[in-house]
Image (cartoon, rainbow, N blue to C red; front, top):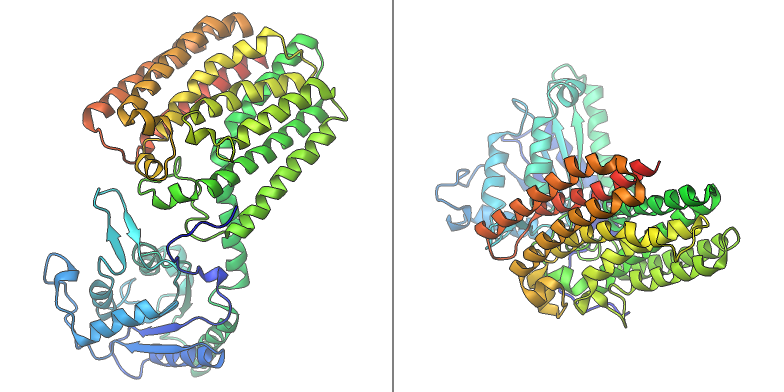
Length: 522
C-alpha cells in the first residue's frame, strides 16, 4: 500500500540525522553569571559539532513580562518577543540555561515563557473544548540549571518542582519532547576547579549534538516506546482469556491438555493480533489523521499519525507479524490435527485481517463490529477448544461464546462514536456512521442486556451451577449500571466526542464474561 498523501508533519528528534538547529536561551537576569558561562560553553560545543546556533539572553528585560490582557496572543508583541517567537519556531532543539531560585526558574524566564508560548503558536485549544493541539511537536529541549541546593535533595526530597514544571507542564504541553535536564550544584560551595569542570561538561553536552539532539539511550527508549504503543496491549488480555476458556472447556470434556499446543496457539494468536493492529493503523490512517477525539481506546495507536513509526517500518512489521503467524501455525500443525485446527485458525486470520485490509474492509462496510465480536469470542474460544482436541462441532464452544459476543458489542460499537466525524469524512461505514451516534448507544444498551440475559441462561448449564451467584451478583448489576450510564449519556449530550469513561466501563463489562467462566472452569 503506498503511503497516503498527508499534510507535512514535523520530523521527530529520533529520526533527524545530524546536528539540529539550536536556540540557547539564557534565563539569568545578571551578566557575568555562571549560567552565562555555561550557555557560552554549550553554544561553543554545539557550533563545533556542526550545529547552527542562535542565542537569546534575558539579562536585559526590555519587554513586559506580565500578560496584561485575557490572552497573551492579544497583547502587542515587543520586538524582543517577536524575535523570540521566530527563533523558537526556527529551532529544532531548545536549550534553557537558568538558575534555580526558590525551587524554580527566575521571574525573567517565567515572563519570557508567558509571553512567547502563546495559544495559536505553541498550542491550540480545540473548538469543542476537548483537549488541545500541540504545535511545537518535533522539537526537543535540554534544561541546564544551577542551584545551591544539593542536586540529590532537589530531585528526591523536593521532587524537582521547577524542572518538572518546565519540562512537563510547559514544554511538554506544547509538544516539545524529550526534555533532558542537567543540574550543576551546589554552587556556593563549589571550587573554581569544580566550576571549570561544569563549564567543560556543558561544552561536551553541546558537542554531543553532532550525533543529534538525543542520546543513544533516549533514541532507543523512544523507538521501543513507539513500537510498544503500536502493539495496543491493552486489548490483548481479554482475547487470551477467551482462548483459555476454550482450552479449559476441552480439557474438561476430554481430560487431555497439551501445554505445547496451548502456548503455540497463544503465540500464534498474539502474532495475528499484532498483524491486525498494525494493518488497522496503516489502512485507517486517513481517518486517524482527521480524528479530533482520539483517546486510549479509539483512533488507533497514533504512531503513524505522529510520525514515531514510518509507513515503511510499519509495512515491514506487518510482514513480520503475518510471517510469524504462519510460521507458528505450521509449528502448531505438528502437535495438533491439521483439520480442523488450522482451518479454524485460517478463517480467524481472514476475518481478523479483513477488518481493515482490502478487499474485505469489513469495518468500512458496517460489519466491523460483528467481525470483532466474532473473532474475539467464538474465534478464539474455538481455537482454544480445537487445539486441545475438542471437537469443533460440539455445541459447547459455540454456546459459551454467545454471551461474550454480545458483551463485546457495546465496547466496539461505542468506539465508533469518537471516530464518527473522521470515519464519515473518509467513507468508513461503522455503525456509528451508518446509523448515527445515538443509535450506536442504543445498540450498546441492547447488547448489554442480551449479554447478561444469555449469560444467565447459558453459562450455568455449560460451565456449572456454581457461577449463578457470580452472574447475579456481578454481571447483572453491572449490566443495569451500564444501561443507566449510557442513558444518562444520551440525556446529556448528542454530539460525538471523547467518551473515555464509557469505553473503560464497556471494556470492564467484557472482563466479567471471561473472568467468571474461566474461574468456573479451572
